[in-house]
Each structure stands twice: as C-alpha cells, then as structure tokens.
Image 1 (spheres, rainbow, N blue to C red):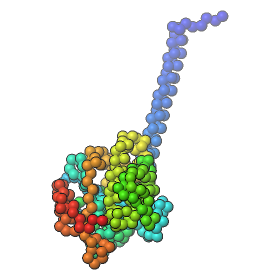
Image 2 (cartoon, one colour; image 1 turned 90 degrees about the vertical axis):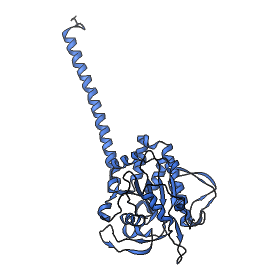
Image 3 (tube, rainbow, N blue to C red; image 1 turned 135 degrees about the vertical axis):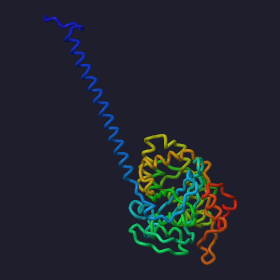
Image 4 (cartoon, one colour; image 1 turned 120 degrees about the horizontal axis):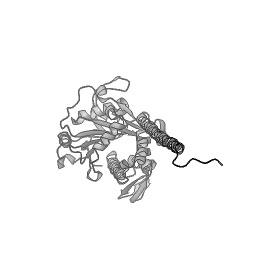
Length: 354
C-alpha cells in the first residue's frame, strides 16, 4: 500500500492552498456577479423610471418676463391634474371631450424652513386674462380676456398655465408637476387605496360615485370618480368639487406618510413607477435624482399641518355660471405667499363659496 502524505506534508499544504484560493475565487466571483446584477437591476430601474417622465423647459417656453423670486428659501409648486382622454386615459373616462384641460390646479407654497405648506386651489371656471404664450409647436397664442382658466391648458399647454398663474399672482413658480388620469389611478392603486370620510352621502349623479356618509377605502378608479364628482355632492358646483379634491389630497399624503412609503425601497419603487408613468414636470425636476432631492427637502412638511385654501372668487355678473377673482381678498392672499408671510384671515374669505 502506498503511504498517503501526511496532513502536514508539503504537498497537502499546497493542495489546501490551491483549494482555498479556488474557494476564495468562487466567493469573490459570486459577490461580483451579485453586485453586477444589483447594479444592472438598479440601473435598469433608474433608466425605466427616468424614461417615464416628460418635461417642459419653463424658462425657454415662457421667456424672461417672469416675476422675481422674493424669498430664496421658499418654494412654489404648481400642481396640475389633466383630464386628457388620450391613451390609457380613454379607458377611465368615456366622455365626449376633445383635447385636454387642467381639471385640477393647485399652487402649493412651501415656506422657508419647509416645515409646513399651503395649497391654493384655482377654480377651473374662473374667468381670467390669458397672456400671450407659445404652444407646444412654438406657435404664438394671442392674449385674451375673460377666458376660462382650464381652457389655457388645452389651447397652449402647461407652460402657458404657469405663465398665467404667475401673471395672476405675481409669484414666481419654481416648479410644476402634472399628473393625468391614468397616473393618478395607478398611484392610488400602488398605495393599496386611500381612506376618505364623508359627512353626507354622495349621490352618484351624472355617472359619479355613489357613497353613503361615513368612512370608505377607495381604489384608484373610485378615487378618480371621487375627485371629479361635481353634481352628486354639495351644491353641485365646481367650487364644491374643490373641497373634495383638497380632502382627497390630504388623505393621500397621510396614507403615504402612514405607510412610510419613502422608507421602503420596494414600495417606493412601486409608487414611483405608477406615479412617473403619467408625469410631466419642469426640466429642473425631470429626473429621479432631482425628484428625490426635492422630496427629501420636503420631508419636514406634515400633511396634518398643511393648509388648503380656495382662491377667493365671486360669481360673475354677466354669467353666473362662471366666477371671477375677488379683490381685495385675492391680492392679500398672493402678497402673503409672495413675501412668505402669514395669510390674513380676510384673504381666505371667498364671496362665492360652493
């Protein structure tokens, strides 16, 4: 019988070293592959979400004739909800409406320090003066008086809405964010629904949502009906609908906070994928990095302390189905936001209440 080398022999030690090096190479190769897979997946996810976002260069679209920023640390964000029936949106609303309109418009003011916020809703039926604008094709859209606020979007696009709001308020809009029907529905479904409470029933008139008084958990499709309900709740006016939209926005922000969505990578990706699919922003926000940085800077804003206000309006004397900006209330409101000051009580008193 041939003697086997002892465990301490030179050949055994060489075999152990070779085996150890092979094992180490396998471990290192596995780790490297995992890192590459993670990096590849992360890069794919980043590219995928980035590719979802459309953008508009406000400075190029509007030009230099814009209000100056008064308080450097404050932020003013125009949030638009568009009612386009194009693409995936057509399956969500079968109304015979061409083009798109800004169904919802809120100017959100975040003061310096960013610990609270104020959202000012602009009624879509408000008669305003539209400035001269360039549309998406670069064609000039002439200025006009006494046009409905929500018609500005359909005629000349989101940059013209920003320019109109800046002209109305004298406030520099730092950013704008637009979400259409499909994006809104997807965001709610990614959250698993949003809980709302009604103090009186919603009748479901004209194809709207029918709900009893009390608390309800709404999915994406029903949430869309909720924020668009007009004739089945309150006085049936657009002003009444603004109250529902503001209520839902607060409930949605509270849901995001409750789920700690920003601290859960898997849930955050799901929300980001749903939200960015139908998202348009200004060019400064048009990347995941920019959106994440902006969201991080807003982390101190608590939905429970957020104030919601409707732009003060009065019923138009010529057409009572329309409203006009009420003065001096609106002027006081805009001045307070422009200077990052407390909003006086009289600036919240709208003659037309809805």
